[in-house]
Amino acid sequence: MNVLLLADTNPRASIAILRTLFDNKNIKVYIALARMGFLNKLPFPKQYFIDAHKYESISEKKFIGSLINIALQIGEYFLMPTGEQLIRWVLNNKKKLHSVGVLTSLPELSVYKHLSDKSSFVTLCQTNGIPTPKDLPLNELLSKKFDHNFVVKPLLLYENHDDRLLSCPFIVDNSSSFNLLKEKNLEINKHFAQDYIGDHSVYYCVHYVHGEKNVFFSQRNLLQQPGGKSIVKAISFEIDSKLTDKIDAMMSTLNMHGVCMIELKYDRKTNQYYAIECNPRFWGPLQLAIDNGVNFPMSLLGFELVKPKTSNNIGYFWAGGIVQAFIYKFVYKSSIQRDRLSNLEHILFKDIWLRKDTIAYYLIEYLHIFYGGMKTILKSFIK
Image 1 (cartoon, rainbow, N blue to C red):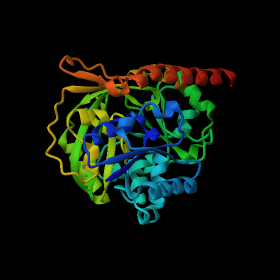
Image 2 (image 1 turned 45 degrees about the vertical axis):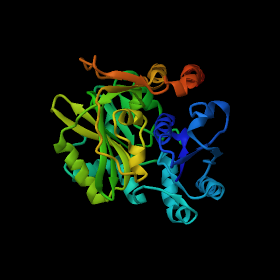
Image 3 (image 1 turned 90 degrees about the vertical axis):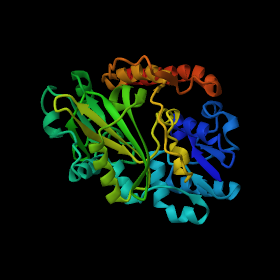
Image 4 (image 1 turned 120 degrees about the vertical axis):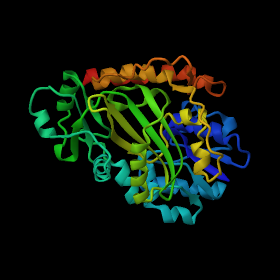
């Protein structure tokens, strides 16, 4: 079986996939990158893949052409689901790609959009009895002084890079982030606001096969970058089955097919979890699930798995993400999200890059993140 991984769309998820597929000698893995430079290839050790190919992402037409060209070179292959916009392009051209041997395990495009677009996901949850944060009037919030923590989200994914359109949620948790948001002069009718829940976040990760839950894993996020960005530290966690049963029932009605991650946030005032967003593709800290015995990539490829025996004693950590978190704190004027959970002495936290296979990238990533962060900060001063 040939597998293609668009490795640079989510490097941390990609290295986790590469590590686990390497153990199966019946799988031949290829990677594809938008850029073929030394630093672009460095996170992905050569022993894990047969060859590296280049793909074009400047437009849907060029991207689909890249996937077809790769199929002509290596034959039929299974495409791993990473990259938000790229997956949408794949689903737009599913029949065409399948005819040339590009195989996927993804939901229908309409289902993917329903789950991935922020506004439709909220509506979907509310319809299925899954709590979501309180909706707030964005225009009213921006017309007065800051007095309430809230988050602003784009209604859907916007392809154009207009400064007045958000590409991801924007958290307002102090007067500085509030002023920064006002400076953006957002197109109000293309965004919506919700109450910001500041307590801990959890992920409910599932592989569904035509609406039926196949394998699942949940985690509690201990450290997250400002602005709701990447997870830096996490542990395995058990979510109340009453809530996950509701999510599974919703996915069943959608005939969800493939992997997805649902983020939920806990509010200690109401003692319940609220659905925040859904990513119907592989998520950044995927390594945590794999380290604890839940092999999502192999499940997605159709391999029969013995019922996962989760160890629960291995934690996830990304050291470079801490450096990036402090840079984002300056850029987004928002706080680093911490869950100060105690009694973690039994947890062995393993860094995503500080391992024998990726030690070189672990050392270089610090410099790469720092350099990129300084460029961003300097640009903000110039503006």
